[in-house]
Image (cartoon, rainbow, N blue to C red; front, side, top):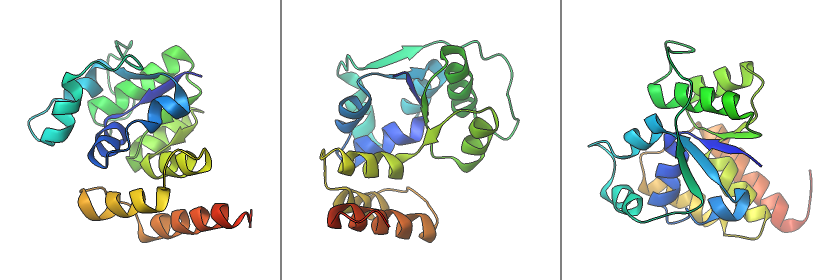
Length: 165
């Protein structure tokens, strides 16, 4: 499975100490050079920068054919991630930014964000998604609508109870 990531899912998964689920779920994750640069930016939390100094054989930095913004409202990392996903015919794009997700889906790419990764990790038995989602919302600057958070907590509870409704 080819998976391309934007900055935020990697950033937030490192911050909550759950980054290990990415290779467990997807084996390999590819990021464009622009995302790597964003992860090294001055505003990036120290814990993320520190994590980046270690070698991660499952994380690959790759150039894309990105030349100009697909959509002027996207930041360079999002635009490069979408272009790289198109170039590589990726099965999944990890992205949180709403405008980026809308553009990726318009281009027929499948997306999931940090919350979706946590839910998938719970389903795979890799972590306690409820605890990690609470950490994500309380200990980082991650933003999502109350409805998205409520729906995720409800989905986690349903998975735990064995109910699909």
